[in-house]
Structures are given as structure tokens and as C-alpha cells.
Image (cartoon, rainbow, N blue to C red; front, side, top):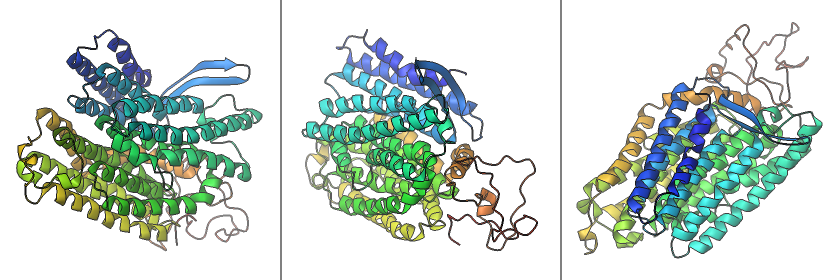
Length: 558
């Protein structure tokens, strides 16, 4: 088990090496072998899940020297905590389904396509488990290459335009992040930090002015990847032109790199700046929620409609992150998983109908429920999940985000963002009505076949997870909760001298006596080594130095 992370990460690369020995004419063998590799990788990742102990620390850590040139030391330093664990599982879960979706969709250059899928899987897993910051950056850049080729070679008629736009946007952000990494390394060297482990830099004291510029560089790179308004324009084009598997992976996993980057790097490394820019980023998130929903309403292309829905859903994720409390961040982390499942399922559904009709225009359909009842049933379940109907996975994440946002300084931002839930119901249900109901007048639609066994096998795991996470999300939340509580403590700025309340105290009514701290309990490590004690003369202190009033988190409204 000590090398299970490396095994899970590099199994797809081993598959790539073996693919070279399979003739390109043997398309069924190429598909079957790639599917087997992704399934074995998924099983290996389950060993990580079942061996993970619920605490806030990184586990399955591997830390060995890699590159050393004078003072420059780069280590192969990897591990998972409760935040990255489920994103690794999501990656290995989605990949076999993506491979299955290519069975009929990709007939040209199948071998090269499968190689791109496996390289992409390794880069995605590697980014989520990297503790060394430059190792993260290598994986971050590596994942662009296979996606570039997947859109550029196997995409639609405007694939070159979409590919270049995708590559330019993401590369601009990546270069800014690289500059910030190098400057951060220089600051760390002056402070005696021996390597690029992000855990060491969490305790580095950085001047607030420097934090502003560093945070802006990271925030811009991650905002492009999320994507946030107004940097979102590359996403609808990339989704529309990408093949089905490319759209699924892009929506379900790659977009999470942006939100994960905020959680792992931008916010805990630069907490002063994160709090300073929280209102601005929350404003952009709310604008993105409403704008994307309104634009989705007028889309005639089903795939582009789903693409804009991604922008809206990830706007909720960003809003929850910048609530700076456990509820909001838990909701955001859960919504990352929910979005990967529901939106990935929507792109698969669009791919199924496109393979049959070679069109995605809503006006070309109507009445499909009569001809394809199994398809209609699954489509309806996924649609309700995307809307966030209670009992489905989408509801739990959005509810926690809205609750966390309302209890923070972003109360009015949250009130406005709630309208996005209504808009989502409008554009999703209206689209579903026009595609699935009405008269079956088009002769081409009258000959459509319902989902076959392969397509049902792809959708059943997603539908099961929609209900499992919607009805009983606690197993997912329990694994991530300690890491999220630790993160909330880390992103408390040094200028704040009031401790973050434990989860049990955050939910107590006003005036309830604060629960006494446990003797010997370890204090969460603050960003700049704070003692966690209130200064003399603080209004909440008595002459004996003990708090006479309940401690209140200043980032939650009274």
C-alpha cells in the first residue's frame, strides 16, 4: 500500500506503452484493452479509498528526491487528504465510462485516441495528488496536450478555432502561475524552506502587499480553468467541438482543477489577499451564475446549453469557497463531485442522441420519449439532478453552499445567486420538454433506437450515484470534513486574532454558552504561526484572561 498512489497514477502510462504493440487495425482490441486499463486503475484507486483514515493529514505520502541542482531541490512528493481523495476517485470512475462512450463515436485513429485518454488520466490524477508545487505544475501543463489533440483531431467542424482558443486561454494563466511559483520559491529560499512542498509554504509569512500580487496570478490562472465570468468564453466552444469523451472529461474532471487550485494553493497560501478579494470573486461568481443561465435559455444546440450550465454550476462552487466557513466549503467540495457526475452524464446523453441523428439542434427533435423510453427515463433523472431536486445529489451540495454563503459576509450575494436555481429549472426543463415530449413528427426520429446494453451500462453507475449521494451523502462528507476544518483554520488571516469556532459551536443558537475546549486538543495551525489567544484588552476578555462572551467567527454574520 505504500506505493499505491504511484501505481494508480502510472498504470495508464503502462497501458500506453503496451498499446504501441497492438496493431492500429485492431480497433476492438484497442478499445477493450484501454477499457481494461482504466478499470484496473479504478480498482487500484478503491484501495486508496478503503485504506484512507478519516483525519486532516496527507496519507499514502511518497517523498523522494527527484531533481537537485545547487539550492534548487524538487522532490517527487505526493499524497492525498480528504479534499483530494474524492477527486482522485471521481477521475478513475469517469475514465472507464468515457472509454465505453467511444465504442461507436470514434472510428478514425482509434489507437492515438486511446493513448490520449490514458495520458490524460495520468496527468489528472497526478495533479490532484501532488504536494510538491512544481510537480503539480508539470501535471497541470501535461493535461493540456492530450486534450488539445482530442479536440483538434476528433472534434467538430470548428475544432481548430476551439482548440486554439482553449490552448491560448489556459497557457496565459499557466504562465502567470509559473511566475508566481518561481517568486514564491525565492521567498521560501530566503526563509530557509528546503523544497517546493506546499505544506512548508503554508507557514511562510508573506507581506500583505506581496500576497495581493501573488494571489492575483494564481487566481487568474485558476479562474480561467474553472472558468469564471468573464474568462469563460473558451468553454462553450471547446465543449461543442470536442468529441463526447473529451466533453465528459473536460466537464467532470478538468474544470475541477480550477476550483481545486483555489482550495489547495491560492487561498491557504495567501489568506490575507483571499479575504481582500472575496467580494470581487463572489460578485463574478454570481454574475456567472445568472449570465450563464440566461444564455443557456436561448441556446438551440443542446451541447452548448449544457456547457453554459457548467459555468453556472461552478459559479455556485466558487461562491461556497469564498464563504470561508465549513458549510460553504463542504458544499463546494461536494458540488464538485456532483457536477462531475450530473454534467458528465448530460454530455454522454447528448453524445448518444448525436450518434443516432448527427445533430444537436433542439428544433430537430421532439417526441423522443415515445420512441426511446429508457433514454427518456435516464435523461429525466439526470436533468432533475442537474437542477438540484431534493433526493438527488445536486440538492445537497447547493443547499450547503447557500447555507454557508448566507451565514457568511456574502449573505446578499447568496440571496441573488439563489435565482440561479430557478433559472436552472427553467432552461433544463424547457429543453427536456422540447426534446422529449410533443408530437413525433420528424420521420428521422421515428426510426431511432433506444439505448443499447453498452449505453445502459454506462449510465447505470451514474444514476445510482445520483441517488446515493442525494439520499445519503454523509460517507462522502465524513472523509473530507477534517481536511476542510483544517483548511478553514489555515485561511484565517494573520490579522484576525479570533479563533475559528469548531463545527459544533457554529451551529449553536445566539446566546448559547460556548462549549469548553477539550484538554490537550491540538490547536489548528494558523497561516502565520498565531497562538490563537485573544490580545489583552480585547472586549471578549476578562481580567483573568478568559473569554466572558461566546467567541464569534468574524466571517459569519451576527
